[in-house]
Length: 269
Length: 141
Image 1: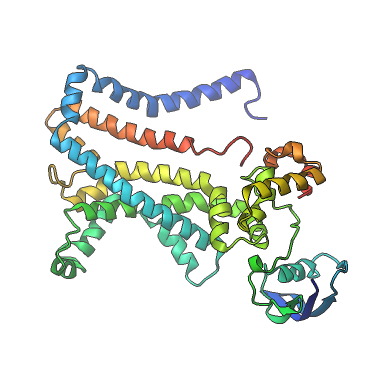
Image 2: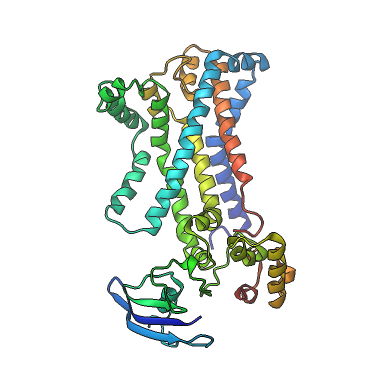
């Protein structure tokens, strides 16, 4: 057996811990340290500026729109892909992975080509007074695009494993398909949904490339939290840059802990 | 509740599971269906319960044509091969599910569920989840 002896077991553990330590814990820990290097004052100065608060607002608003939409789409998409047979299923399956394989910059540019004033829908949007590019709807669109596959891909294997027998049992007991979905299907897959929601949230909060292009990064207007970091850095305002990074990390951690509260009760898996 | 099947056929891809099957189960009788694996017993039962739609033929339950009726409106009980307990619900919630769907009163439901659990000697385990039961205990419901 591999790693059965005490020595090899500790070696294996040591390698994993070192790997994690150097690549994840040290950089993240350093950000925490550097943020508070000069005390609380500069940190508070940063997070109370108008630009910071507005960027925080745009980021949270984007999460509040993009994540629920992708959760609904994700659960519906997973149900269709796992339970139904139809023409074009393989194509749909491949298209869902597109955001995974495309660079965010490409995603941003493609949205620009469709929705900007020189884009396909540009004329139509302009006539109806809707501005997508260089405004919040563009940011939301970009974030929906990049985080599209997460919920679908988390839920699909869970749905496959759960099978259809519990749903069939519910329907023979008199449950309508709506009742079966809410009382049987959704509770059975909620762990997968929760995980998908957390990584979608993290991705939406942190998205940089696609948002940079579609938002135009207008100060105090269309900036999200990640977009604040490079200008701070360029002005050698390192504390402000680290503070913003730390707030981003804390928001993602909050989502992670919130999900842990939905963990199945003992035995209910 | 009599069950009459007339000329039921069902095909899954290339496989003919049922080919023009007719069957009459009179009211109040007990019928056993025997046959080798893959001979279509489960398919026939699933068609009676409404979990599968026949390609041809009709299903009459208590003299009424139920062929197009969805499973939840047929009132046909069904014991699944793998028990099909609801894994995210306790034993109590599992038994109460059907009554809850039928909007029974809470007190009446509680009484009935404990009565049923007593009958199969599982009342002491009402708050356990299916994964915390032994194989034999799981087979009861």
